[in-house]
Length: 239
Image (tube, rainbow, N blue to C red):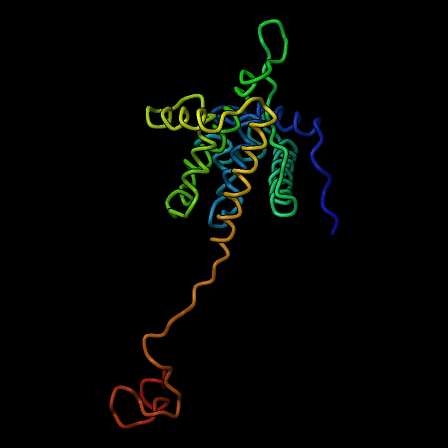
């Protein structure tokens, strides 16, 4: 089956518009935060079902029922379709190319001029906040204590606009040791961090545990281990 085409700029804008159209009391994310959130879902070491990962996109009220006042079934289905396509597109890029293009806004100054250099990195903060929202709802990645994960997360958290003292110290250390000169360099580092996390998480989610028996298997014609002297099939194996 042929993969669906990559979302166009118009479709990404449509996602943003549909998210903004969801009525109260739902508090939806925007397209940029959504993008970071989807990445945070994809790196988890467990398979998360759609109903579970879709709900936090709409805040804490769950998924809105299509057909409620101000939210039609057509709007609902279109939004879910576009979000699912974006998630699948990101996963396909991670698995096949080791790359995906994150949705990151270009930051402008008061005169409408696009910021350059380190000032342009502000846009990554919204994306990182979405990633953080995913891990707040699905803590399995951090709880699994997998090798390499804390350093990769710190590299993403450096972009968060609101940080506690510990994170501020870590961000300063990263900025001193691995400074990011411009938005392109920062995006490249961010994507590679996510790809590495996804590879760790996906490998963990596909592990198959070997079943170890506490005692040798008893054949149906063997003596019953209870000591009755009867065959297993005529004793405890009769059930």
